[in-house]
Length: 515
Ligand code: FAD
Image (cartoon, rainbow, N blue to C red; front, side, top):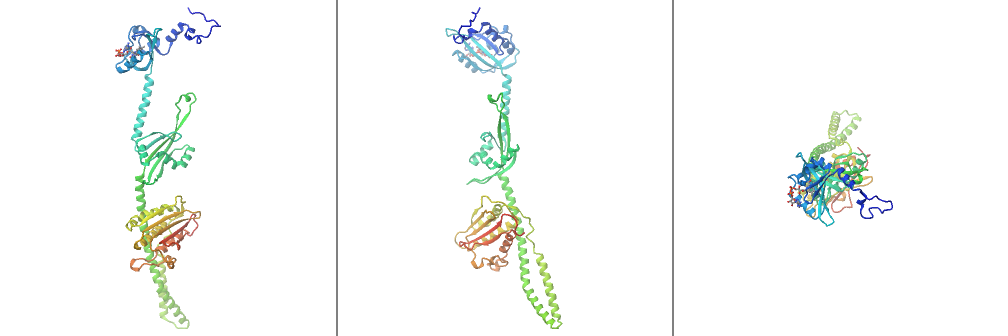
């Protein structure tokens, strides 16, 4: 019988014997009714006691295990080293916790999460062991399943031909694949940071609308490295916070999934196709231009004699008024009329270059394309090109083919001038400059330049400084001038430039010039 507890007695915890406050049968009942499989053994692991949960978990009735070693539950797959570790720990009178594969009475196996505590008497001797275990087979199965799925996902992600990276809400990398790792080496930094920075305004808009971003093309240009194109897709998703804090108050974590595909090769192919298309278009333009030059030249050549003929008719007319009825005058009149009709027909058959529709044009692209197209010629002529595009250039209303023809003409002229200059550097400097009302393109060569007295004449049709044997009709700059005028701009030669020739094209930012 326990001593009754009096009200003025100090609490049992203060006396250092809290267990004394609990009647001994409560300890027994607690063990009996515990939801854990509890067993008590002697110092050799022979079972002296097993609770009902032990019976339920193992399938053995208490009477069947009493006096048996706990090894009655052991199954051969648990490595020997586990038991050796278990016993080494117990021999040091330390509790041991670990996982063992146990076999039930019916032969089925389960995973036991077991804790063994040595019971030490006042003399410091281990007299008993207390074993407590629970069946964690299902927990283990789920853990393994999650692990397997994770491994599977990681293998699939790793094997993917696109770079994949998972970022937390602060855009720190949580997970990436092999392709992404390769990109780190290629770009010499964190690819996600570079690409997301470029897409930032779009990202903000997409996030606000809770939409993902698909196949956004990003150009990465780094000094000393070839430009690279990437197609990026971004998706956002939420995950339940798994921390203990969020157990009763669920919280969410946000993640960013970025997939990156290197499309540089595709872009190069597209670019080559585009440049080839432009080359074909400009070749066609040149053919049309040659036809225009020839027809305009023919009209020009015919106009002279026809004017003389017309003057002769006028002279004859005056004589006719004096009363003379001259059949020669009638024939001449007929010839002039026919001649004018022929000239009108010729003029009408000169192909019109103004049919193209005006669209927003990026001058940097147009000029860059022309330089690309002219690369073989520039290389063959040993010309050093200094291309300085304005970093920010608004699109202007323009006709791409006509503007391409214009800049091709100016670059061709510069290359030809450089070709002629003997000795000295062969330099071509091309720059685009932004402005509020107009944009400017400057084409500068280190050739012989254009003398002051020809500064305006060179824009006249059929004016050429080259001999006729060189097949120059002198229409190139006239056509260039015409294209610029159609865009409402100006084309002039910088008189102050003395180290060669500097052509300056100014084009208005807004439409409104002549069609
Ligand atoms: P054993 O021949 O029994 O032992 C393997 C190795 O363990 C031996 O080489 C030896 O180094 C060491 N060892 C074994 N017994 C002792 C000992 N008394 N003193 C020092 N070293 C020893 N095992 C289970 O498989 N499942 C259980 O649920 C389980 N519960 C246990 C609960 C308690 C309270 C205790 C004390 C032990 C428990 N054991 C349990 C361990 C069990 O007693 C056996 O050691 C184990 O099952 C291995 O048995 P075995 O016949 O395969 O090898």
